[in-house]
Image (cartoon, rainbow, N blue to C red; front, side, top):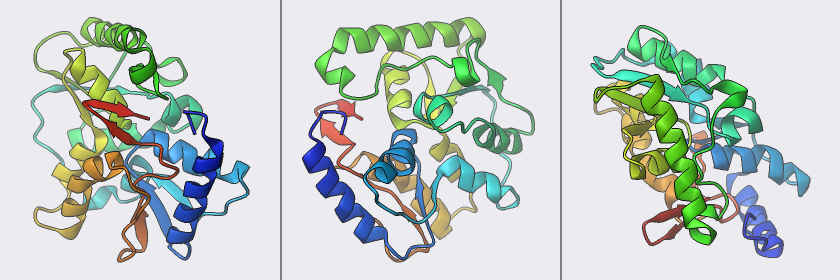
Length: 231
């Protein structure tokens, strides 16, 4: 889709929609996937089960998540597609507040003014210097807001986490935090722990064994390109 191959995207989207037909819900750990499924698919007149970002599903089940013993200062990052794209701001904060026992730190630019990580579209591939500069600007914002070696940024966007780490900033996906909070050894933990890798895989499949399906690659949006993650 972002590369401009709308014909191939439409074909992949139709195949993915057929694969998840009949599911109770579709759950994805990535902001970009959630945006494509909830905004772009309807433009192709494709009907899906209700689509949730992982933060929204986790926010529905807070009592099932164990509080974490997290010594680091945790800041929340509002990614472009999850925040401005879908308007999902409260769910990640509700989950982190429950897990930490207090609200996460806010970056200076947050919610609708949250900074881009430079990882969207094909920018890391087509304009790597620009992508890197955008990521470094976000990393500088983090360093100014939550200085120190004991700080970590948590984001609902897989690409943003990768971009921040490449810029030298400690970053984790919300998926990882949720995985740590699920009962040890449970199927939920194993599925959540695999979600980051699954969402980065170049496939259009989903796990039919569960009523809530994890979205892998709706529309060929995520492809491995060397060490880059193209969204």
